[in-house]
Length: 263
Image 1: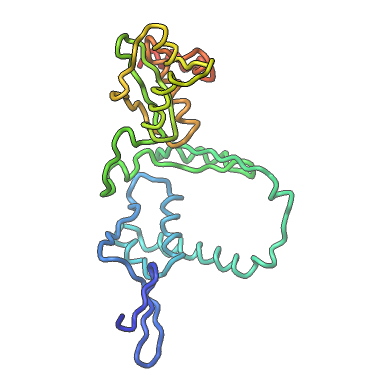
Image 2: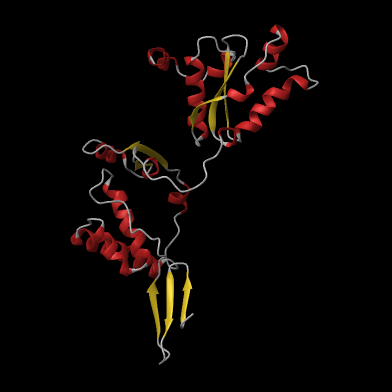
């Protein structure tokens, strides 16, 4: 259209004299918002913001200025990144392989970023350990995507609680699938022809009780499997008359119990 070709964030302009010009293209809804330099984040993440823009185009420096990045910080980081990119461009084919270093396993230590304190963890940064930072306050907490919210039973990666309809005994579980799929399995397990009964099925058959299948509570949402398992064990321990087996929390270290009891 009008001698212009747009692909992703690049715009190719063809002039009458057959000159080709590459320009940066962004949609009208582009906000120009990035990680602000004055925000409470580690310096490495702010450098990463500069790196990502330098890798795409030099024209983005105006966006960084609009987000309060000092010019000297921008250009120092640009020079650092350019040296890295140029170095890898020319030596990537000639770089010797070191099988000993490549085979060595590296462990990552991820800690919440707290100014004046978290930087001390960098002393652990060596050949075997890498230190990275994460920000407790994420933009997603404050800026929500304009999408239709999922119904409760369509959510996944959750820790949930099913309460008995006739007594005070709840059951706590976790699932990576949609909640309605897991609840349906609990509800229909009693119909299965099997000698192995779940604690929910055993409770229903032994007492003639039933559960509030349509009033399941979501106690936590966690995409990381290990963290979700820990959350499940903690929430089991918080219940006074839980139907869960003792083995469901045997991997929770006993030092956590006094803390859980205070919650």
